[in-house]
Length: 634
Image (cartoon, rainbow, N blue to C red):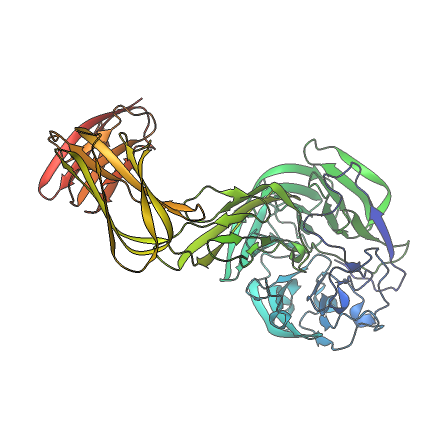
């Protein structure tokens, strides 16, 4: 971009979308204090987040060295700021200082007036995903990257390209602790550079081909490191060979589209925030002019664009209709947290170029499950869903689902209370998962946390056995410990699913001795019967034992029984012996569909839930013996 160095007053214009946006604020945003002008600055001073206000104000008058093509800025949580103009600078973010020069560090690898590079869209900044400041808010470890295009490495024009710098901050100072690191030579990158989020705490850095208009390169920044670039060719090339120095690139607020303007053409493509892939071509506008201004509407359905201080237009992505925004002329544009698009418009004869980039670092952090509250078996859970500045992000409460990792049904709500089952392993560790959709874009978010729960079984059941004889079934069980044990409820079933109570046996209350119990069920004389123990505390809480199966009368040829047969949902395989076995289910073509290993103590298995209606063979192998039975699902 040709540079003309004049001083003038920078005028701010607010562009309001032609149609009512889907939501009144841009996604995942907060209300900051904005500082515009030739420094292109956006800051959150003094560590107060969010702060009052939000109305754009003219930036303070800079020195000549800072006055050309400001492109990107980023703020630490403590107010420290880095700004990229024709050189790179770090500031303390104190707006009371007239030149923002306190604690400044000036790096001049970029020679804007030497190699005729451009900074209007050539810089992005975003947090280091490994910065370790969430959820604790540890600002001492705060760090972010600044990626610059058309940047000099080694001080020569021929080596300019895409360079990476890393900043850290303590207090109000900012330090460049790494850079420049060249990540792409002059062959590919140009002014078109942008950044978006991946939904899991990482960031996508995207640049556009300098000489091939339908090519993009994408890098992935995560806590584990940096990968890429991956090259994507999306749509048809429309101006191959053109130097797209005057160009711009933006990702939509919901991270599902990406727009490029350059070479007199505007294109919009699909963007996948999970994979970083750029595909297809949703819209193309020919004759769009030199690309200097570019921004999506808050709902992502329209793209606003302009050239070098030219008329602002917007295109409806779905229909292709192009509309001029009356009285609006612009160089660069940025969607604000209030859902409006702000732009720099220059009076006649003025030529100071100032740029903005999309502030991806305002996007959500990965959700975090807080430490559950409560004691014993009961815990109340909650989670945080915040942006970079720890401001809460709205959630669609009707989409919240909790899985507590204990096999119990899922629960819903912002902070449900869950009763974990008593466990013979004390304490027991469970993985809690919460899944929900945000209210801005409808994206699905999920996070997990391991939680240790101390909820011991009220009894330690050593064994539970049943033996058939002429008088019925002799049932025995032993306990090694009992805590507040009121009674046992002995239950019987003929299908392994539906149980009925046959007797209550009084418990010992509290005991640390080995105690033995017995009962004879005289109501059954033949066939296969199932038993289960339910144990009840004095307060009504209860837990169930494993199911045992007992065969009375003449035994089947096979050492197991299938019931019901045919079945509609699942069937129960009951072992008649204390032996290890492998149980397999095959279709009639001999294909293995389901398999389980059964230990000697495992007597009952529920199987067949995933099978379709049809005929199947159940194969039972124990030692050198193998048995098969036919079963049908209807």
